[in-house]
Length: 368
Length: 249
Figure 1 (cartoon, rainbow over the protein chains, first blue to last red):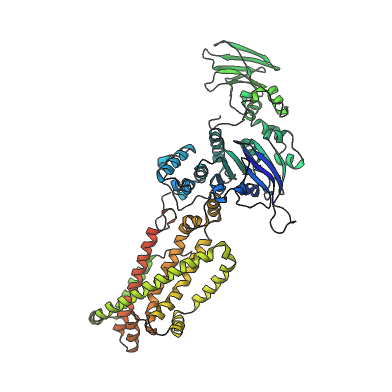
Figure 2 (cartoon, chains in turn brown, blue):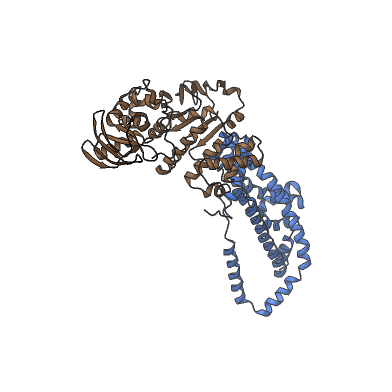
């Protein structure tokens, strides 16, 4: 857990404008907290005060309730993973040596740090035999950033600081690396502080979002809280007018689907939630054809882990108000309706129903 | 940044010069002159030893002083002063080596000692400058990453800054030591010995063969020193940042 208590940074004489002004924020263990805001809003400065690359002029930072000023700065940094946008891999070292930097600083022997490098390289999805002996200049931007993440995780630090880690990567690779990171995070449960200027990235990645402006924390909360109830005009402007759609991105079909009980090989009549139509399944439960709202749309369906934004897009494309949903093998499980999605959009956070228990809203790498 | 000069281009220029010379010189003249040159074999051998010793001392002191000085000037705390010192060094470099030797002689008298001091000062300056600039030009994000990962100052210097600046540093050393090999001929003028003895005595006594025997050996020595230092660059600079051994991408 990271606690920022009245954290401030003033450059120059006291009384001049603060880069970070009295920020208090708590990030729970295993959470991803995205610090977001326009350039110069103090988000990076705030992050850099956690590992004391910048010394606060006021307030304090606690990690697991321990004041970070009580820890030797170098020891503190070695216990915190650090990823930056420009990656900052050392070009004079191989990938193996780069990942092994912190382990070697901590006194691990060569064999152990090599084994760890191989393990991490595998975890970030790079072929060990091919990449371990390469130099950073031989890697693409996306590959470099994967190695950068691996390096930050090398000594298994409980806390990870990431300064726009995916900002310099092209959109397609960025989405892949984000998904991969989220899949890793499900297993690793690091406490992550991630600086971003991309609200879509924040909504996708964050357990908590902290929105900054001119050194002040404007609002902090779960993505849902911020999207449903922006605290002020700045926040609502920042999250954008399409915030209902942004919320849907974090919701899955599995959270709102209506289960169906049916016999294999039959035609199932649908009459629920104001939706009408039929679904024909074969003897294995696979969807053969669908008639929805009087339109025959063939074997259309969505998977349980599809996010609701995609479902809405499919419904708009097909001009229908519901869709069958299926498991990974394509067997019918139930239906998802437009009415249920609307209820989801309008539902205020806090009255989360039982189906939110499974809701981390996180796609895993294989989604879609 | 100093870059690797294309050796082959100079080889070709040398060949061309020989051909042009060849048009004015008959075979018999050439043979006679060659014989005269070879007549200075034993002098060359003896003076070459002196010359090499001189250059070795100059290299030892100029690297031993220049690199630490450059490192010191590149430290963040020195940044305020380093620019001024660089300017001074630049001005210092424009003072002819002969003048530097003369000044050294004024203070330390005639002899090898003065020659070593004068040449060391001349050689030192580019080494200090390249070391300092090379270290200052290491990308700030590397330093940020190094700090953020928990390296101490000395670890950042030796594991990150120095290896990544090494090409610029060694380029400075290579240029200035090669230059020093040539200019060490001037040491003779203040009693420092070396191959300059043949060159300047040859000029004074109007014996071109003697002058050339000294000049050619000095040149060859400089070329050999340059090639040796190139080998050091080739093998010493870390593989990932070695421009002489490009990586396959």
